[in-house]
Image (cartoon, rainbow, N blue to C red):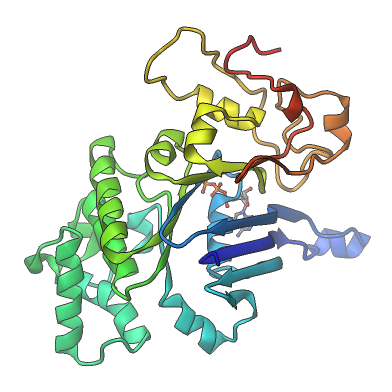
Length: 336
Ligand SMILES: Nc1ncnc2c1ncn2[C@@H]1O[C@H](COP(=O)(O)OP(=O)(O)OP(=O)(O)O)[C@@H](O)[C@H]1O
């Protein structure tokens, strides 16, 4: 049984008519941030979730944890449907499912010390009650993530970006969770610090037997870290598979365009840079048919009208594109 199973999950924002809409009777605008996403995460693996900014990655991560309520679908964690849990049961489940945010500056309460920030989950979940016990546990996890004992009474603004992310990691791990949504945890950091934090997350995963949904817009980070990859475009998963398969032979033209931006380890001089037309369309008015057709170099008539279904290409490798079976590689041939 998968540790996490996401079934037909959707998260729409809005939909409540504003004043003009109420007067005219027009329906409210709906942002389809996540639309009918299904995926699984196996115990002990890292599933990478990749896609450009605004495609719905954070919304999906937050909806999985019920930090924002899904509009439709189910999330089953260790056999329990967490979308159906009562508030007390959900609170208990939160001990087992945590999140590390992209922006350590914004996600830490500036008025609390490190000891208070990291100790809060212990109090909330009743894991430790006495101040001494909490202090001891906070000290242990902080030391493990690379913070010093004499830093525990300092405030977030007294730390560098990388150290603040270590505080965020300590806060997520202090309740000994099993599953972590890592929401672009290194994107806001200097490149020199990114590698340290990635190594720390890898080591902690091994030591604590963790499972990650690792969100990133950087395919090199995902390629390095993940076991499997899910590629997201405008609220939907367009391709999913083992990282080796996706890197060696990306099948969806969107995945190929992401891959084309990554430098080759052994440059052949034959690789095409795929430049997409235009920007990501608004999830307020997604295009009909295949949502990628407005930017796809391979789009033909059917793509503008018919939604492609996800097909299995090899065990565990799926993609949704009308032209999959033509085996066209934008990376090797001149883009049309
Ligand atoms: N609270 C909200 N209300 C309305 N729309 C929202 C809300 N939160 C996100 N959105 C919209 O949902 C879409 C997906 O946003 P989301 O932040 O999940 O994307 P992302 O892929 O995580 O991007 P980024 O990497 O920039 O965070 C965007 O169009 C965004 O504007």
